[in-house]
Length: 164
Image (tube, rainbow, N blue to C red; front, top):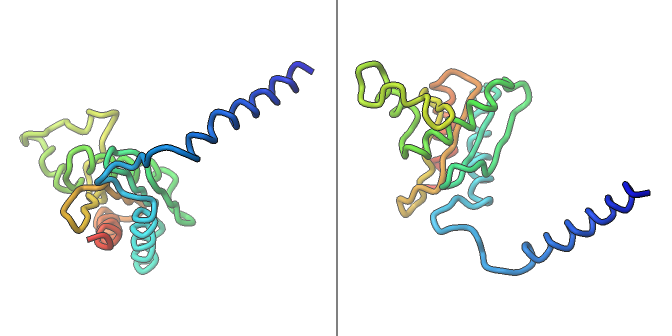
C-alpha cells in the first residue's frame, strides 16, 4: 500500500512541477545555438550522403555548448561508433576546428601533442566538423563515424553544408 501511495505521489509531483516549466516562461535557446529544426535538416542531409555512399553511419549533432542535440544510428552501423561520433562532434566544438585539423596539430612534436587525453577523451581523426550558419556564427558541430575517416568527414561535411 505504501508503495502505491508513494508512486501516485511521485507521478503527481512530477506532473505538478514540470508542466509550468514548459507551458510558460522565456525562450531558453541562446542566440547562435543550433535549433532542433536545423539539427534535423543537417541530420537528413548527412543521412542522404551516407545512403549514397552505402556506408552505415552514426551521426551526432551537438549544440553550441557541446551538448547532444540530435543523433541517428543507421541500421548495421557499428555500436562502437556511437561514442566516437558524439566525441568527434564535441571535440570539433570544444576547439572550434575540424577534428582533422586538430588531429594534425596533436601529432608528436606539434604544439597540441597529447591533447586527446583532456576533456574526458577527445577524438582526433576526421569526421568532426563545425556547424557555421549563414552569418558565420558557430552554432554547434556534427560528428560522424562508421566508415573510413574520409567517408565520415564527407558525410559530416554534407550535413554541415545545408545551413550555410
